[in-house]
Image 1 (cartoon, rainbow, N blue to C red):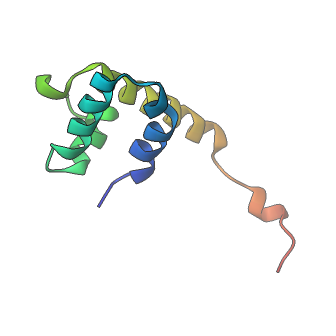
Image 2 (image 1 turned 90 degrees about the vertical axis):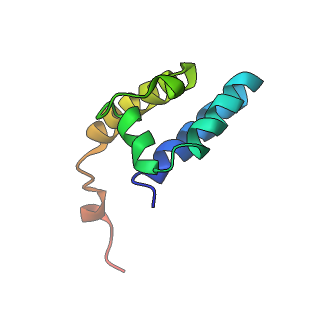
Length: 88
């Protein structure tokens, strides 16, 4: 199971279109080679150091994306909109 499937899928949605073929290959390898999705999540959030073989420009982009995403989530929390929705 993905710890945060939205992290890699949102990253892909925002970044794949502007990545070079080499970067796409590195991204493909990054999401397919580690046996554990948690590893990618830990590397992206810098909870664990990224192994040299995966510490590429693409990993740096994913780390930056994770930082920005955390900031966005902090800005959005807590979500109180439901308090103002009319009852159904």
